[in-house]
Length: 309
Image 1 (cartoon, rainbow, N blue to C red):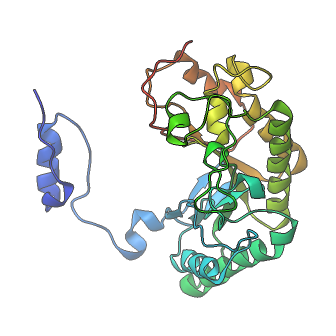
Image 2: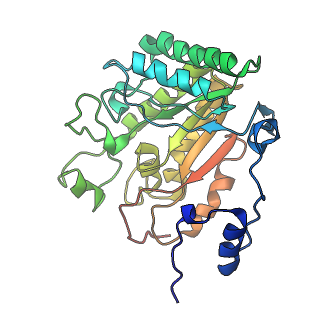
């Protein structure tokens, strides 16, 4: 028996909402009225281990794609980060997906973390803090991080109209989407090791610039996530579960070594919209104490194939 889909906007008050969830035989508690101002739970501080967050409002990382061609912030980028500060959010989770190298950009206007962009990234952080203090009249700055990424098969570092993919293995659906031939070269193990070193350098730079944490982007079909699905890939970074998780382990180990006081988050796609694989339960055991936070998100939606155990 199918259940009709009810538009949330049609549930005009708490009673109507409760009636609806009760009809679904679901228990979802809700308050009778929305609390405002200092009474709002969104404005209550919280902690995660040793991390203190001034409220429960967060800015999530997105690719702004409004930087300069060399990966520096533009006036538009600075204006966005000013608005992040004006929001009063206590957690800036990445704020921006920043490429660890020029070749790893998903767009020719994506930010890059490198020696020549240090000044610009430091300006972004300070601009956000200044606006936050001005807006909230608080001396406590928000918790600010950078999301670090390499876009893998979705790289477009030099032109909006030219794909420059770095692929870990040949995918029967995604290769067709990018019009890649069966002879298109795979990224090599030495090239992967160089990208891991880029992540290490990027994280150390983020710590040097005063960011509180980095978020390792391991999701949504980008390079790190694609390596996780590299069952047919040969070499050190494909095939077995140990090899397919080697990229993330080596990234985390290097960051911990170079910047031991820097907090680390991982935004991880644990599946590809495919039949569940029992190995996914091994993730929590595979990275003990390496990351502060493991944020699970959905995967790339291109495939409905089964993967072998």
